Length: 186
Image 1: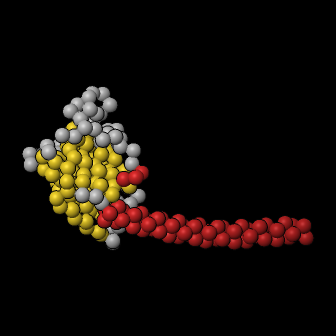
Image 2: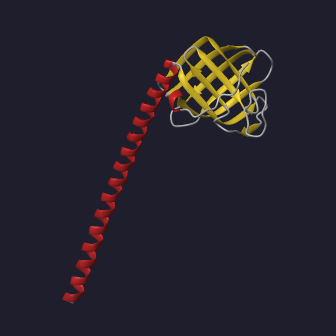
Image 3: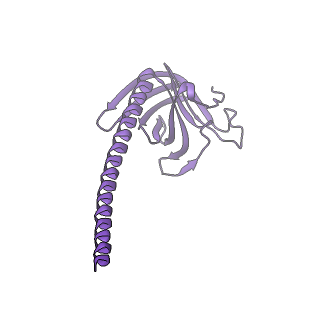
């Protein structure tokens, strides 16, 4: 009987110990989840500040992974040849491909010119930045709207005098960190 009681006490002790360990593990998971959430929020805040700085300094490149038209047809593209660049009072819009030469030498078109209007709108609550650019080039006048989001792909919409629209989706980087190849512009 004493042996059975000892076994019962050991079993009871093991159950109480395991229950305590489980509660402690749950608290640790909650603390870890809260820490990860705080780290993510801090990272998004830091990225938002970088986006604001890039927009206000007029020093960024949207390197497109995808380009789509007004009908929603979406194509995977080479970021080094398909981009929107803002560099001070100048901007470049380029589409290209690795297959043919095209008018710009990289299988597409390059519009380069002066920025006639530049506007930055910040949304601190959502952590996003919107930049509106009016580009005057030798081949046309274009309106560019760039939506910058920290931690996700940025997007840009390009419209011109003619009907139609191109949407660029990709990574937004500082000009000095960009690896784009600009073709010949006219």
